[in-house]
Image (cartoon, rainbow, N blue to C red):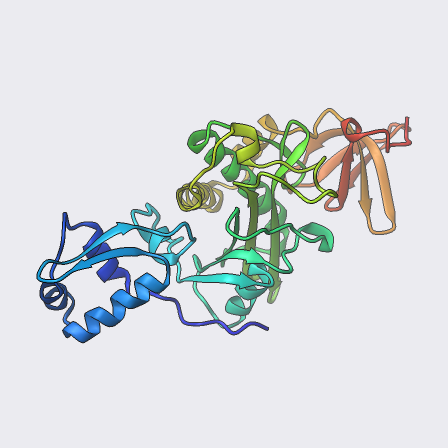
Length: 337
């Protein structure tokens, strides 16, 4: 298991001071503001430069910040983030196997709700049912958020569906793109997958001990491997331009926090109605595989517990709580008609 560092918070005050200062600021003023010696200031400036921040320094004038790197750094995510609970600690990695795996480790260690793990790339990113998630460096959002809802495990599916709604809200407002939702948690644009959600939990005495919400979103991908070329898309492909990833992540954290607090206060009914408005599953003939179990039928409804209700060819209503789903529109793979 990859070793988790402590969250990098020591540079935040220095960085924000540079951001909010017009022109140059002297090393002496920086030291006085932060309670550091000039050597201490220089050490932190070198650390910022090593992270990719472009900082100009001139003798007798001091330093000024010219540009921030295109990275999912905690200092960038927290800057002007309008959340109360989803504020970290934030753990950033250039490369990791899986952000969900690291978030689960933090959950075991007692990390607080709102802890966030982000990575520039994943070597073993996972989707649902153990599938791999294509995670090219610097192009997508790969993030895992730790929650500690005071709820029983049966509430996991509604939280998953709520997460999908928060992503639709985020993309609609921030990007001008409103994807559909394929039950339970895939974001779909023109029949292709834009993103997905993987929720995992640990329980204790019939209550959720912690819950991990993993997000994979294709942002600036121009191309995909041959095996994904016909089934995956990205914001870049759909809108014809690149997007800054940090503002997208901030917007999602803000939307999801609002929806999560609504869920805890008022339950799932209102959120479920919004989910249905964006569904690309309901009203379609679908096949669902749940291990050795195989169901086919018309997708009638999503129940209050998040399960999908199917009407079979024999007129029987069946309930699917999880599984791999195939829509009729995705090809001639269904045999029930």
